[in-house]
Length: 400
Image (cartoon, rainbow, N blue to C red; front, side, top):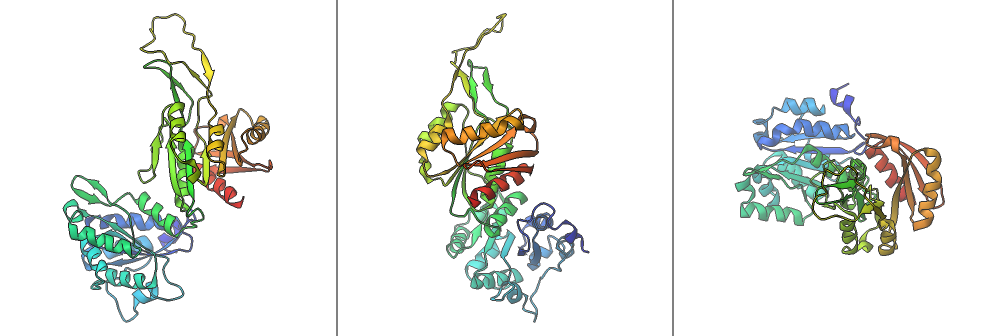
């Protein structure tokens, strides 16, 4: 067994049985392709490397041979490998990914010039309508060249996908391996949320007591980010509205921040919620808030009593402003015994479609357990990582 087979699918099956041709060109970022190939394999795919002669001066072909278990193609032979993998054949590739891609190769592809194995594979893939992703990496002055940008636009007009480089210190650098793999899964994975608009509201709100103090709820934000990632991977157009939690949001996700409940309500009331097909409210929002005191309360007081008043219920606003959306709420209780009744009450009170229930002991853990109830009170119990749970929630939503 080759070492590549030992790791295949160890992270997920999202690219199971997918055949990916990985084109590598002569950018210094080619040194990252071993990691990229291995990560694609960890999600189940089979990777077939193709290199330009310039790329072989950056990274030795044996490194990619080791990474993938497949000898890289550097020059074409009478076996017509470009047709075998990217031609109009029954077992053609699912994707041609060029990462990194130089300005030289982008421009050649846009003009149909085939003078390397990579550009010939590209022309063949275009003619066979195989999905293509190009990930540019070069010096910023080259990336900003007017003709290079025009050639990128020419490629986009015929359906070639681009992942924008990370602009940093005069360099158009390769984005993270995670971002590249995420976009690969989004393009050729299950795509069962394609053409759907999904809103995830997560994290915690924070309500000011005075100018320096506040009360809040505990929330890592991991559930919200996992739900946003899951729906993004499945092809949805995703918006994440994210409160005051510490878990970092991947930079390729579209998100807005809010701090207080009033700021969230303003977002709700200034956004056309009718565009969303699915809305998931998993935020740890304040049920009570104080009347804010201007300035700073003296720390010399022997006793401080703070009066709290009930807040507006976000679920009521959601259902009113998005009457046709599938709405998913979350309910937290101390024990599983009291959870079922609370979930039923939430469905009845707000006429929502699903409720995800969990218990306090599961908070802030990577592995979790949930109960998922539909509006007929049918309940499923699920365990797993945050991302696995997020996938299971969307599986259930899609089944209706």
